[in-house]
Length: 371
View (cartoon, helix red, strand yellow):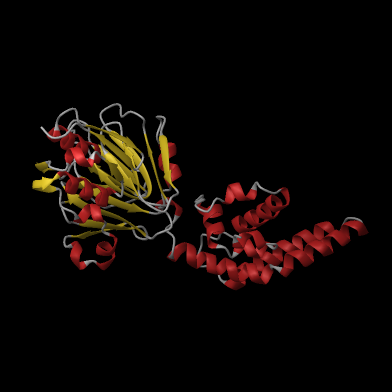
């Protein structure tokens, strides 16, 4: 059972950081909106907590606890003076409300100061935060959204032949067919991109506050909304990274990354940290996957071994006629190629009406044997 299912008081919601993010920054990674609508009684409690949290959102960090306390007391006195003019029935309602209001005042007072500190020191100001939803809303063309709710990476093949290895708890939005002079996709989470080369039609990955521009290359982008930074790591080719135009007042210039270089964008101060030797960065090396470590240069290598390398890199299953291809050896380069292009090259090299079919993470090879 989720912890929030046991919430019975407004203070329970006010102390929940994910609830704060949802109300203050419109970040709903934990499905608060859907959860709220499951119960009318729950919705009323959530709405009360939401309104109170918005009322306590204090942008001026110079206000002291005493200032906030005095403001609360002044507000209460005005309410009491007005309501005291009503009937005794109304007076009883006032007493109930006053008791309810003041019972949480102390907790809210402390929470308000903590929220100000958390807001200014842990989360960038609203103008410095760009959410996945904002990126999608800025796009006028219809998009397809793919969400990976499984526990292993999923392969997404785009209309231009590019492929994306989408990690768990991540999602990607992209057009069914790329039109115009640009190719744009939108990422929340983590994905490894292998882009089909097309110098006349550059490829853009929008992820939180940064935009990664490429023509044809392979790279990883890690951009989770609840993490303090965004990472871009290049395996092959060259990429250019810059701040999103939606970002208010960013003086960062475009950063160029070459193979085995990376960039870490710190969301707290909008700074770029270029890493020229990724082997010296523990966090980066820990997250490097098989696809970035395996070699795709093959010299007189059995086809079975090539298929095994592809399976290990992309975490896919390849079904092929083992008996017909057991004596096949190939010499080929599959580096810097999207998955579909790798499969085409292998099939064309084998010949004899060899073809492939993809169904999610399952690949089926049909062939009559080697040339």
